[in-house]
Image (tube, rainbow over all chains, first blue to last red; front, side, top):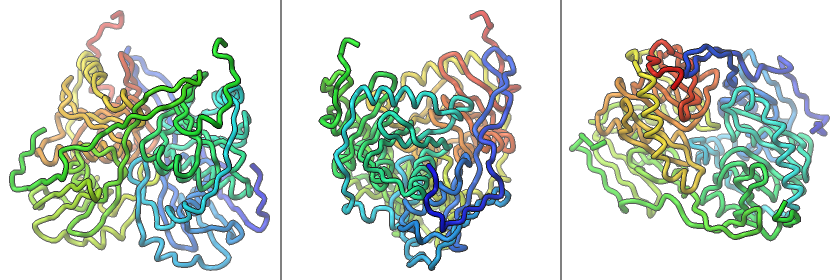
Length: 278
Length: 278
């Protein structure tokens, strides 16, 4: 997606960082194999010179990750507030400057509430706010389109195919993949896409969110905040993930691989147009 | 493992909470299937009446999870400091009381440093401390023992087999599995085993740590803190995970499934006693 916020200046000390590195490993036959493993690097996010969090990340699209994280955690609500983003891989930092001081930054930093479904992320006070205001449209999807999308997705996951140990997320429209991000942390991948959409002022209402990861509570909340009514996962769903999807009106298609899937919520929004024989 | 800290009182409002719940899902043929999904519930950990973190967890062994988390984050170093643990599933809380006040609790709470490899966990100031003091023995493992262990592990993962969407971790000695924990968060599973070992005053030096999850930096650090010199994963390893293992002297066997594996560090500690023909 292309950035549609010209007022925002984005500076990067390097165009990109490597996402995998070559290593050797010894296999079960005692033979040395040349392999690649996923890079993992810390990225400390600063908001108006205040350190907010250090994310362990693959490092692709650090500016989108930093912005998506700050938006999802409720630190910044409006892209027009942004003045500049400086990603510096020499100091492993992403510095975000807003036009005005962010209101009650201290208050937000002091309100650590719920942690990530993936384990132990601290989610700041702003994270749970505004959920009740979220209004999502009812999605419609043809089974044939879903199969075409899953086929297209199988051509992504480059780092995963190369090195494993990463999760992938895709922002999709019908069978098209508009953006695909991989990261060592599945929540980073989601936040990066959120940052992308935010910068591009892209609406989520006509989109499908794909993830290789499990659909835990935080994953569903983030997708709802992106305004996306359909969540597609290669993996499974948890109780809280499902309950939140039911509350928020998000269609949940999990265990989606090849020509198999399970709709855990919103099956009425799927058009079964593929004959059962095929 | 059985608790060997009689001075510590552990009170639970319920013996156990359900780990999966039945749901219906619609498959690709439009048929309704009865499925189980993993439970996910918040557990707020209090240390001497101060809320420390809220973990999203499956809920098995909450007392071990809470203690393991506090130990791994450097809040409590000595099991003899513990007075009582109260796990209350009516308020989704685990309250830990120590005999004396924990020193510089505020300081630790203010020192949020690195986040989890899985995404965005806040790791408190104490987490990185004391790594340089860790001395691990050199492990030895026969390939035949490794295969026997992998075969035994395949009989665990009950919640995963039933509902998916969880990670499993096992504390192993040779081919034996001493404890196996599953959780919706892979870091919770590790912390739970750390809490178990701590309560049982179990040494990690002769143990193997197994996880279904990726070996990111935080995973390797936690295993090092448990004193375990051999880390075995069904999944892959990241660059920082590998670099830390090399620094800390942890043998890394990843991609371990069936009769396949890749040793990323410490291959000299593995005895290839299985003939290549077999």
